[in-house]
Length: 458
View 1: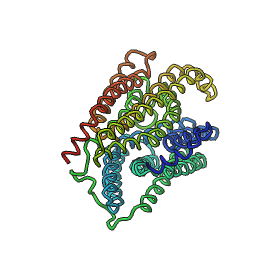
View 2: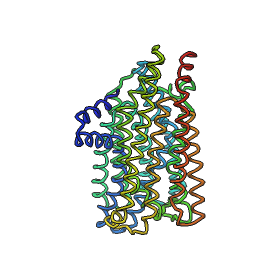
View 3: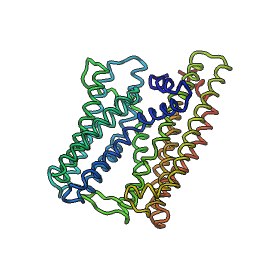
View 4: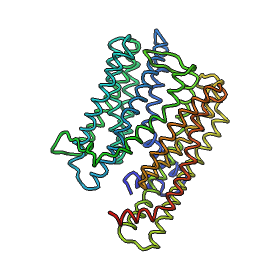
């Protein structure tokens, strides 16, 4: 059991309601914390700067710029994230600790070069009519955020959740504070505060990696060796991030979108409800993280250990059944808690929009978006379970299907009309979740045989 799993179990050990809630709150903080801080940080910069901005339209330009930096950096570094994490996991399993830091530096160097080149191209084309300072800040922000996602993926894979959350918290406090202080310089001031906050996050992540690991070489490229690089994981990382953002891009560059700055578009109709909906994922993320870390991971290890180390047939079957029960219980609890969240939004969504000063005309879209993001958490949970039982091909096929469905169904709903806006995103996730559940049940049924055969052939 990982250290964070032990911590969660200790928090809930007494079984009282307060300790149970404390454990779930802790799980939510370290699992969804960086995402929530990112969303709230961008929103806070806009809200707190609005009274002092001479040109309020620059707030929209800033928020759109920050959103694109986040989306495009996640998609661009998707191929690095999971493949590098698997490489590091293999090195740690073989106790080759000296190869960790040098390959981390190698991946970040390649990511910096790739995203830097892409950023320079964007400076010369997409933003050719914008100020030099804006273009430089966008380039720096793109490279910085890209490296942050690699660092976050790596550190969370070695269970450094507390540190990641702390770094993001400090970084966004700095980002919000500086953006407000510099808003007198307009769009460039807001963006400078945002970028500086993320530079601090990146420096903290790099410092922690250097503190935790030592190496006699500064840079290695072993991770890109064809025997160590998992193409399927690179594709999964790219496709999943593309799938998550694809419906937004379709809306941004459809008739519902409008040009904001450079070639960047936004869709007021779609963006506000979807951003609010993503704030509703905390309960589901907390439950998913808690159940996977405290129950499923331990049962999964017991099953594979029973197979590897010659357990009896009865022990293997008992461990298999316990693992399946843990997986199903985790997914069921996610579904249950997000159903409650959806019902609360249906009951009080209008009042929530009123408190935020947003028109209730957005309410129907908010309803379907909350359902969509709830299904996204369920989908993420299933994918995680597939990873734990080493079914990469299943994950690859599901993420590819998600991209195709989200893009095509979102486009279709745009052709039909406003009454179906958001249904493409939610519908695509409903379909892939149902298919993923069927595939997961089938994989569990064949798991004993396949695991034993893999052991026999190794």
